[in-house]
Length: 179
Image 1 (cartoon, rainbow, N blue to C red):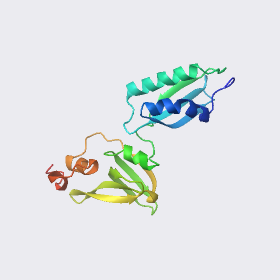
Image 2: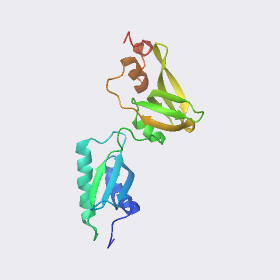
Image 3: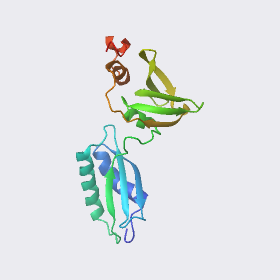
């Protein structure tokens, strides 16, 4: 590269290996040429969501790699995680959201709110309210039109969380009042 800004593809090729060695993958690269100076945002995610220290380390390593390029234009580099309210569009997103509360829009027009449990290649297990207790509902990924993680301001009940995270024992059948 000798002039201009690196492209999205060039950024992924340049940074992908370094991010993978750190346990993360590049979810997206957004290049905003309207900003002054232009901004390149690299969105990284992994099985363990990157914390602030990890984002800082990824940003430093990305800056070092970019410093080696002959890029004429100045730009701002930002490395971030996808954010809490990003849509879940792939099985890996559901796997990474295990234990989180999500709202789904289904292909039949209905909506469903539940806590993400085990996710396979074709379906996700959702822990949903069943009367006063909880049950697990298998939902095919192909039936999901839209899925968004919900922001929670209080922790879930233990029985609900146990079902979502796979800790199934005596507590899983308890009602919230009993837990």
